Length: 87
Image (cartoon, rainbow, N blue to C red):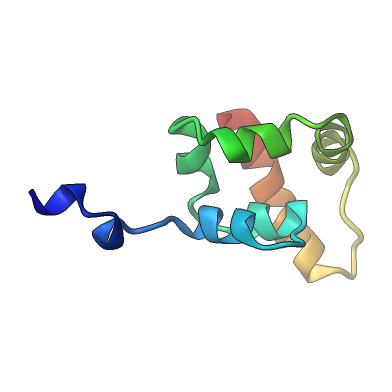
């Protein structure tokens, strides 16, 4: 059957980030499909996110208010907050 062919399977953008040598938490959180990947229990993603330093960083994004003059920080804050509540 055609769905058994590995070459035809589409990898997610999250997996593409996880395949890189160096990536950051912010790169993953900026990816639109991260919530779906968490819900699908992507083991590589969950392993990365459950690290103590990353959990602390996620909590800081929720607790600390973004800088007033940093538009990217305000945008990111909304994503981080949504990500934590959904997962």
